[in-house]
Image (tube, helix red, strand yellow):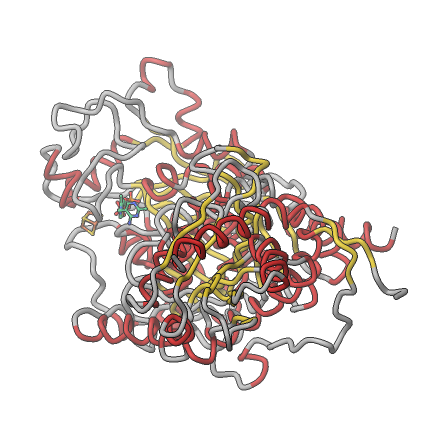
Length: 271
Length: 365
Ligand SMILES: Cc1ncc(C[n+]2csc(CCOP(=O)(O)OP(=O)(O)O)c2C)c(N)n1
Ligand code: SF4
């Protein structure tokens, strides 16, 4: 028996605030599905969001929810999880939120391996503020603050998370709804810091500024740019050019922060 | 007395926090506040609480707010530079009505300044550091035992008014060791989280499906605009403004027959106390107002006293901060002058006596 995903959403708050064709709704819906399939009690879940179009997802969950400040959702979640280890804490963030202003909190959460599930809505641009450059904007792509093309190199969020010490890392796209559900489920079930990066479309800014106005065209673009991990491993360096590997990159066991804290303090107290 | 002990200001703060029921601390090392975190790192686990060092001060205040919504009394401690980094989220705590305590052990600044020297330069930052109109309570202390008491009061006021409460200490008081008898269990009042007493403000995990946001919101926690946003702001600022008379806390000395008034706070009050005793012994009609809560500001008592004294002096370790408030409150009834010191040393009783005697000689000419 699985629950109805609508039990996890504040359906009375719909319609949401996102533009027509935005990928953020797909990801949010997929998270609700994951919660339903895991049959979690909504009262044991907390959803924390940062600031950005993506952070607005925090308003849609029929759970305890906190819409925090720009870039800091992971740090708020760290305090909440330490205070309430019994809660499933899910953090929804944009790419700018998580890796630009919030990059420091993000890498330290990876390093600590704190039991949070971070879902990063990566649209490669700052949507909320009107299409400015993000630390994930591909080189030479346009934004309102890189009108002649981005001169910088983008972060590879999944690789960064692995290098920093996250213990569950997966990447997919808004094209593949069932895969988002699967990865989010795995992330929530995993004990440790889980990062699920979802490449998604912002037709309003990224699309318009980069000659890709049609959301369905953007979805196909995401599909054609990405390659499942096992296939990617078979490819030559030439074939890999311009391709982004997707799939489950890492799922490993390592001591989790909150549990370790309480365990060591117990030892300290009794010893 | 046999229960006297030698206690450092920072330790008194940490012990006051535990006494008040604080069970979460997150911080980032900075002189002269680090001993608070070091003490709590050792002692917090013994009472089942959490004390963690995080990646910076922004993370620390964020985690404090997160923990507070988890139903736990929470605190962080820092100094001027870290306090600046916390400001955005102090505003978030104000608009989300999150009870929390922020300790700022002031040091000479701006920037790295003189990290091991005392100052009272964050007075305005404490009141106005975060953006927008906001409610905040700012406390201070002058003695080690008072650090303990004010820390407990900070937690109590944070719970009663659901606001961030700031405790302003300074380098000298933070590091000073005094022989004190600290309060025993039951001696001071401790205000519990409302949730525990009447359930009207639940925490996360209580089944209330709360929505907490820094956006303008209504009582359900969901965004609003226009008149409803104005109502929210007026209500949260009003929580403090409307209870001002109840909140203000000061001690007056020799006010009845005073011709001259000194208004002081924090570490500087110790020198003022000595100076006032000497001046009184020498027959000088001096009075003293020792402020314990800087905000809300005690407008009314200052205005009343200003109307029957000839002159007001405000000594402080800055180039003129609280003196502006005193001047505003005195509203022209008495001239207000400032004795500032910013070389990193404390104002001495001698300096104050000299200043007052010279002033009197001039005023009485
Ligand atoms: C401290 C601070 N700086 C800047 C902003 C303005 N701001 C709001 S959202 C945003 C970027 C959001 O981009 P992203 O995280 O990628 O999310 P998206 O809107 O694309 O979903 C910025 C810069 C802010 N709210 N707070
Ligand atoms: S601006 Fe972009 S990211 Fe924001 S809602 Fe619109 S399409 Fe989505």
